[in-house]
Length: 216
Image 1 (cartoon, rainbow, N blue to C red):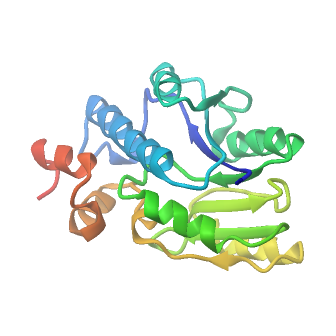
Image 2: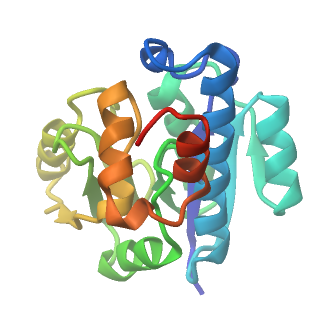
Protein backbone atom coordinates (compact mmCIF):
# COMPACT_ATOMS: atom_id res chain seq x y z
CA UNK A 1 0.00 0.00 0.00
CA UNK A 2 1.22 3.50 -0.86
CA UNK A 3 2.57 5.68 1.91
CA UNK A 4 2.52 8.89 -0.17
CA UNK A 5 0.18 11.64 0.98
CA UNK A 6 -0.89 14.49 -1.29
CA UNK A 7 -0.33 17.87 0.38
CA UNK A 8 -2.21 20.92 -0.91
CA UNK A 9 -1.42 24.30 0.68
CA UNK A 10 -4.39 26.69 0.52
CA UNK A 11 -3.95 30.19 1.88
CA UNK A 12 -7.00 32.14 2.98
CA UNK A 13 -8.91 33.01 -0.16
CA UNK A 14 -9.62 36.64 0.60
CA UNK A 15 -7.19 38.54 -1.60
CA UNK A 16 -6.34 35.46 -3.70
CA UNK A 17 -4.57 35.77 -7.05
CA UNK A 18 -3.79 39.48 -6.94
CA UNK A 19 -1.88 39.28 -10.22
CA UNK A 20 -5.16 38.51 -11.99
CA UNK A 21 -6.65 41.82 -10.82
CA UNK A 22 -6.18 43.55 -14.21
CA UNK A 23 -8.86 41.20 -15.57
CA UNK A 24 -10.77 39.73 -12.60
CA UNK A 25 -12.51 41.41 -9.68
CA UNK A 26 -11.84 40.26 -6.14
CA UNK A 27 -15.05 38.22 -6.13
CA UNK A 28 -14.14 36.64 -9.47
CA UNK A 29 -10.64 35.77 -8.27
CA UNK A 30 -12.06 34.02 -5.21
CA UNK A 31 -14.64 32.19 -7.32
CA UNK A 32 -11.97 31.01 -9.75
CA UNK A 33 -9.70 29.89 -6.93
CA UNK A 34 -12.50 27.81 -5.42
CA UNK A 35 -13.17 26.16 -8.77
CA UNK A 36 -9.48 25.39 -9.33
CA UNK A 37 -9.00 23.96 -5.84
CA UNK A 38 -12.11 21.84 -6.37
CA UNK A 39 -10.66 20.42 -9.57
CA UNK A 40 -7.34 19.60 -7.92
CA UNK A 41 -9.12 17.88 -5.04
CA UNK A 42 -11.32 15.91 -7.43
CA UNK A 43 -8.27 14.66 -9.35
CA UNK A 44 -6.49 13.67 -6.15
CA UNK A 45 -9.57 11.91 -4.78
CA UNK A 46 -9.97 9.93 -8.01
CA UNK A 47 -6.29 8.99 -8.36
CA UNK A 48 -5.26 5.49 -7.37
CA UNK A 49 -2.19 4.99 -5.23
CA UNK A 50 -2.31 7.81 -2.69
CA UNK A 51 -2.34 7.08 1.01
CA UNK A 52 -4.41 10.20 1.68
CA UNK A 53 -4.94 13.90 1.03
CA UNK A 54 -4.04 16.73 3.38
CA UNK A 55 -4.81 20.44 3.08
CA UNK A 56 -2.61 22.92 4.90
CA UNK A 57 -5.07 25.72 5.50
CA UNK A 58 -6.95 27.97 7.88
CA UNK A 59 -9.48 28.98 5.24
CA UNK A 60 -13.04 28.00 6.30
CA UNK A 61 -14.19 27.11 2.78
CA UNK A 62 -11.11 24.97 2.08
CA UNK A 63 -11.48 23.28 5.46
CA UNK A 64 -15.09 22.38 4.62
CA UNK A 65 -14.05 20.98 1.22
CA UNK A 66 -11.39 18.86 2.89
CA UNK A 67 -13.88 17.45 5.36
CA UNK A 68 -16.38 16.78 2.58
CA UNK A 69 -13.97 14.40 0.82
CA UNK A 70 -12.46 12.94 3.99
CA UNK A 71 -9.15 14.78 3.66
CA UNK A 72 -6.94 15.71 6.57
CA UNK A 73 -6.61 19.36 7.62
CA UNK A 74 -3.24 20.65 8.85
CA UNK A 75 -3.20 24.15 10.34
CA UNK A 76 0.46 24.26 11.35
CA UNK A 77 2.37 26.56 8.99
CA UNK A 78 -0.77 27.60 7.11
CA UNK A 79 0.15 31.30 7.28
CA UNK A 80 3.85 30.78 6.57
CA UNK A 81 3.61 31.03 2.78
CA UNK A 82 3.75 28.18 0.28
CA UNK A 83 7.19 26.95 1.36
CA UNK A 84 6.37 27.19 5.06
CA UNK A 85 3.09 25.33 4.64
CA UNK A 86 4.68 22.49 2.69
CA UNK A 87 7.61 22.24 5.10
CA UNK A 88 5.28 22.03 8.08
CA UNK A 89 3.35 19.20 6.44
CA UNK A 90 6.59 17.48 5.46
CA UNK A 91 7.74 17.46 9.08
CA UNK A 92 4.48 15.86 10.21
CA UNK A 93 4.52 13.22 7.46
CA UNK A 94 8.20 12.46 8.03
CA UNK A 95 7.51 11.83 11.72
CA UNK A 96 4.76 9.41 10.66
CA UNK A 97 7.01 7.57 8.20
CA UNK A 98 5.03 8.75 5.17
CA UNK A 99 6.02 10.14 1.78
CA UNK A 100 4.75 13.40 0.29
CA UNK A 101 3.36 14.64 -3.01
CA UNK A 102 2.89 18.40 -2.91
CA UNK A 103 1.12 20.48 -5.52
CA UNK A 104 -0.67 23.84 -5.69
CA UNK A 105 -4.36 24.63 -5.95
CA UNK A 106 -4.14 26.62 -9.19
CA UNK A 107 -3.69 23.81 -11.74
CA UNK A 108 -7.28 23.20 -12.88
CA UNK A 109 -6.41 20.95 -15.85
CA UNK A 110 -4.84 18.29 -13.61
CA UNK A 111 -6.23 14.77 -14.01
CA UNK A 112 -6.19 11.65 -11.87
CA UNK A 113 -4.18 9.96 -14.64
CA UNK A 114 -1.45 12.58 -14.30
CA UNK A 115 -1.27 12.04 -10.55
CA UNK A 116 -0.99 8.30 -11.16
CA UNK A 117 1.75 8.88 -13.75
CA UNK A 118 3.77 10.83 -11.19
CA UNK A 119 3.36 8.10 -8.60
CA UNK A 120 4.35 5.43 -11.13
CA UNK A 121 7.52 7.34 -12.04
CA UNK A 122 8.64 7.73 -8.44
CA UNK A 123 11.43 5.41 -7.33
CA UNK A 124 12.50 3.84 -4.07
CA UNK A 125 13.43 6.17 -1.23
CA UNK A 126 15.31 8.37 -1.11
CA UNK A 127 13.70 9.73 -4.25
CA UNK A 128 12.64 13.04 -5.79
CA UNK A 129 10.14 13.32 -8.66
CA UNK A 130 9.07 16.64 -10.17
CA UNK A 131 6.55 17.91 -12.71
CA UNK A 132 7.59 21.38 -13.90
CA UNK A 133 5.40 24.36 -14.72
CA UNK A 134 4.75 25.17 -18.37
CA UNK A 135 7.42 27.89 -18.30
CA UNK A 136 10.02 25.52 -16.80
CA UNK A 137 10.41 27.94 -13.90
CA UNK A 138 7.89 26.75 -11.32
CA UNK A 139 7.75 23.40 -9.53
CA UNK A 140 4.12 22.36 -9.90
CA UNK A 141 4.27 18.91 -8.32
CA UNK A 142 6.96 17.23 -6.27
CA UNK A 143 7.05 13.78 -4.72
CA UNK A 144 9.57 13.33 -1.93
CA UNK A 145 10.39 10.19 0.02
CA UNK A 146 11.20 10.79 2.75
CA UNK A 147 9.46 14.19 2.86
CA UNK A 148 12.50 16.04 4.23
CA UNK A 149 15.07 14.39 1.94
CA UNK A 150 15.48 17.60 -0.10
CA UNK A 151 14.92 21.16 1.17
CA UNK A 152 12.12 22.82 -0.80
CA UNK A 153 11.79 26.51 -1.59
CA UNK A 154 8.93 27.53 -3.84
CA UNK A 155 8.76 30.69 -5.90
CA UNK A 156 8.68 31.97 -9.45
CA UNK A 157 12.00 30.34 -10.34
CA UNK A 158 12.13 27.20 -8.21
CA UNK A 159 12.38 24.42 -10.80
CA UNK A 160 16.11 24.51 -11.59
CA UNK A 161 17.06 25.21 -7.93
CA UNK A 162 14.98 22.19 -6.86
CA UNK A 163 16.83 19.96 -9.34
CA UNK A 164 20.12 21.25 -7.96
CA UNK A 165 18.97 20.76 -4.36
CA UNK A 166 18.08 17.12 -5.04
CA UNK A 167 21.42 16.44 -6.73
CA UNK A 168 23.23 18.11 -3.84
CA UNK A 169 21.66 15.45 -1.61
CA UNK A 170 22.85 12.70 -3.93
CA UNK A 171 19.39 12.11 -5.45
CA UNK A 172 18.95 12.22 -9.22
CA UNK A 173 15.57 13.87 -9.84
CA UNK A 174 12.98 12.17 -12.01
CA UNK A 175 11.37 14.75 -14.29
CA UNK A 176 7.83 14.06 -15.51
CA UNK A 177 6.34 16.76 -17.77
CA UNK A 178 2.53 16.68 -17.56
CA UNK A 179 0.48 19.26 -19.49
CA UNK A 180 -2.41 19.58 -17.05
CA UNK A 181 -0.23 19.90 -13.96
CA UNK A 182 2.09 22.25 -15.88
CA UNK A 183 -0.63 24.85 -16.50
CA UNK A 184 -0.73 26.97 -13.36
CA UNK A 185 -2.75 30.18 -13.29
CA UNK A 186 -0.82 33.18 -12.01
CA UNK A 187 -1.39 36.06 -14.43
CA UNK A 188 -3.82 37.10 -17.18
CA UNK A 189 -1.71 35.50 -19.92
CA UNK A 190 -2.10 32.16 -18.15
CA UNK A 191 -5.89 32.44 -18.51
CA UNK A 192 -5.50 32.69 -22.28
CA UNK A 193 -3.04 29.78 -22.29
CA UNK A 194 -5.53 27.69 -20.32
CA UNK A 195 -8.22 28.45 -22.91
CA UNK A 196 -5.93 27.06 -25.64
CA UNK A 197 -4.91 23.95 -23.68
CA UNK A 198 -6.64 20.78 -24.94
CA UNK A 199 -6.46 19.19 -21.48
CA UNK A 200 -8.51 22.09 -20.05
CA UNK A 201 -11.46 21.62 -22.42
CA UNK A 202 -13.73 19.84 -19.95
CA UNK A 203 -12.81 21.76 -16.80
CA UNK A 204 -15.30 23.72 -14.76
CA UNK A 205 -12.75 26.50 -14.41
CA UNK A 206 -12.53 27.11 -18.15
CA UNK A 207 -16.31 26.84 -18.56
CA UNK A 208 -16.75 29.48 -15.86
CA UNK A 209 -14.11 31.80 -17.37
CA UNK A 210 -15.90 31.62 -20.71
CA UNK A 211 -19.33 32.14 -19.13
CA UNK A 212 -17.99 35.25 -17.41
CA UNK A 213 -16.56 36.54 -20.69
CA UNK A 214 -13.04 36.49 -19.29
CA UNK A 215 -11.51 34.35 -22.05
CA UNK A 216 -12.54 33.50 -25.60
